[in-house]
Length: 71
Image: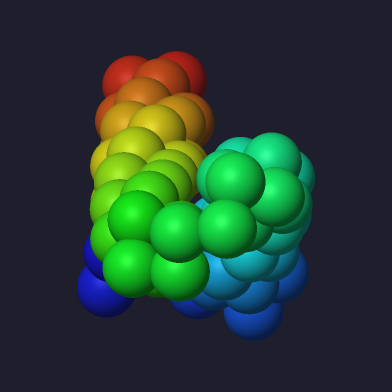
């Protein structure tokens, strides 16, 4: 995601991943198995982070290519 210049766009994947990790982790932690909770939270965090980062990269590249075509 080196082509993303905005600090806000760099922050969004972290916030999204943290939010998903909390909302997925809370019900799993209620079961009492700490190891399962840690694994589920870690997987949810990294999957969400990279998915959001990928989508933002696609959007930024698409917008840049569409503005280049208009010139």
